[in-house]
Figure 1: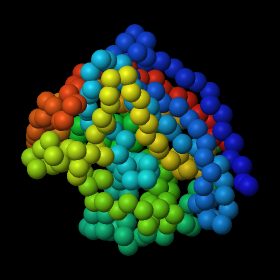
Figure 2: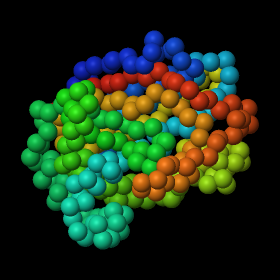
Figure 3: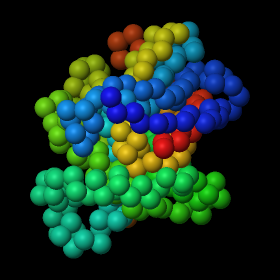
Length: 282
């Protein structure tokens, strides 16, 4: 079995007070699972996963919009990647999704990125957006730029990670859940009725009984391959009582309110407490 080495360096509490000071707390941790190797599916490797644990610390049953709803737990780095690919006239003309269909085979690019390992000694922040805007995805930022707020963006690594995850989605997981609404960022009124939230869009929400904990899991194979040190952090600390319904460049976003109660679960809006976790992939 092929072995990929990882070092979990740090678990740092964030937010106000302890991890349990809010009605909802979120814990990020790393674990390893066995699965097919992306460049040789006949080989089984141990790959890393980001485990997101949601805990209801209150005495009420609560529901809220969660941020981790990607198909098969494979995150998108779409907006960061597009900053690089935007220089390709073909992508500008076709749009990203059509461009992706035409250029599905990223294997050669991935093999080059894996062989070169240009990020091995670099440190990054993985900012995980909450789903209240049209660009809610994962975004890689230089560690120094993140903490001094200068906004530096390593475009190439965002592109490499997106290429790897596109390849994962199209090969290893191509026969899994293909529901179009896994990628929905905007909602209409029919999407957020009490009935729809319990059925059609249920995967977009977290339902927690009083004292209950549930997990979501993200596949981190892409980080195993490109190497480097990464701090995973939630880019925000508040659940909102609304969802995005419409957006246009240069215009204010439009929102719809969520039902105050779905079945026996009350809508939770407000701050949550969370931690960050730093991992070295080598």
